Every structure is written in structure tokens, then in C-alpha cells.
Image (cartoon, rainbow, N blue to C red; front, top):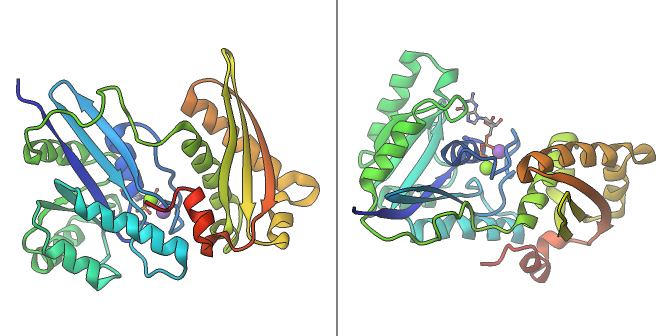
Length: 293
Ligand code: GDP
Ligand code: K
Ligand code: MG
């Protein structure tokens, strides 16, 4: 039996559905999803294992022009996704005409590996619009194979996966066959809490927040977790906690529900809010939170 294995990296503008697609492939909620840009800050592996294949997908942050060190580090994750890919999935959404960053677009255009251009969110468009967009991309990126999909409705995802399997090289697996991701359990705790913060707080607040899980103790019946919610300023701390602690309580309740689903076990979650001045521009802090590669 020949075995195929390789790296398939998902790149594209913010909010086009990269994380939704990754989760659709792996059948798990590995990547958090919200309607806000910069929801995904890391490169996250999702591994799909079969008897004769191992597809190592990576979800990346949306391509943006960096405004501070956190952004630069996020874009380094995107750059690294070009370096080890066997297949690139360049995700665009219906209505979108170009990549926000020309330099990245050039790299996609001149990539020496197969590029599948996935036109996502076709559930929002009619047949004619889909055809127009396919024609647009065919002209702009003639080297890519174009496949229309809806990651949200799981339409076309199987077809993309089958095409990936055709394109992957013959290779033994890179990870043990029961591996689902490269990230430790605490990472997913941080992300689930951060997703609730993205959902419940306005404008700037979520972008100033980082979550750091200090304790993760798995007992027979329960997992005990203690996580620090880091903000940049004292005023943000007050907003996160809210009147009589109501806002933070809501984060805790909703995060705990998702954590119980994710780990399949009862969860005790304690959250603590701390001020960590300007962590987004502090390289040492960024490294501690896993942003330096
Ligand atoms: P990312 O920033 O590229 O990772 O995008 P996300 O996966 O976080 O999705 C951004 C938003 O687009 C979310 O609100 C998703 O529910 C939505 N979305 C993703 N895929 C689709 C799709 O196929 N159709 C529709 N209508 N919405 C989608
Ligand atoms: K998003
Ligand atoms: Mg994402």
C-alpha cells in the first residue's frame, strides 16, 4: 500500500472563512471562528489521518499590513506557510477581487507548488455571480485550479479534499497517526476564552487581550483550569470584569460550555484579569505567548 502525506496550508484575506474550512476538514472545532478580523493569531495544525494518508492542514492568520509586533509575528506565521507547503489553498470569498497585500499575491502567483484557489461562501451568491468570480480569478491567477465551495455548509469540501489527496506526494506520515493537532490542550483553552471575548466586547477590547492558561489539571471526573486574561490597561480590566463582575461571569459560563464539549469532560474554570502593559509590542511577552517561531 502506498502512503501519502504532506502539508496543506490555507492562506487568504481576513474573514474569508479559513478557520471554518480547516474545521470542516478535520471535523473538530480546532480554530475559533468569529466575524471579526484577526480572530486567528497563530498558525494552527489540523491533521486528518486515514489508513493510507496523512493530510497536515494549517490555518493561518488573515493577511494584513502589520501595525505592531504582534501583527508582524502573525505575518511571519503566514510567510512560514509558504515554505513547507506541498499544496497551497488560497481562499477568497465571493465578492472579493484581490488580496490586500500585493507582495503576498505575487508569492502565490509564483509559487512552485500546486495552488487551489477556493472561492468560498458561494451559498451567498447566485450561479451567475459565481461564474463571474471564477472568470475573474481565472484571469488573475491562471496557474491556479479554481474550485467553488461553501465551508460553512460543507459544500465542495469533500471534492477539495479528494483533489488534495491526488496532489500529495508519496510519503510516510510525519506525525503519529492518532495526532489531531500540534497545539497543547492549554492552547485550546486560551482560544476558546478569547473567542468569547471577541464575541462579547466591543471594538478595541478583544485586540488588547491575550489569554494565558496557568493551570490545567485533569482529574478522573473533572478538569480544573485557571486562566489569566491579560489586558494592556487598567481601564480595560474594568470593562472586561463589568458591573459587579457580570461581563466576566458570562465569558466564564460560555467558555466553560465549549470547553466541556471540546474536552468531553466536566470543567471547573477560574478566570483572573491582569494588566500587562503593552504586551503586543513587547517581544519578550510575545515570545512567552507563543508568537515567536
Ligand atoms: P477567517 O478569518 O478567514 O479564518 O474566517 P472565519 O472562518 O473566522 O469566518 C469568518 C466569518 O465568515 C464567520 O462569520 C463565518 O461563519 C463566515 N463564513 C465562513 N465560511 C462561510 C461560508 O461558506 N458561507 C458563509 N455564508 N459564511 C461563511
Ligand atoms: K475571522
Ligand atoms: Mg481564522
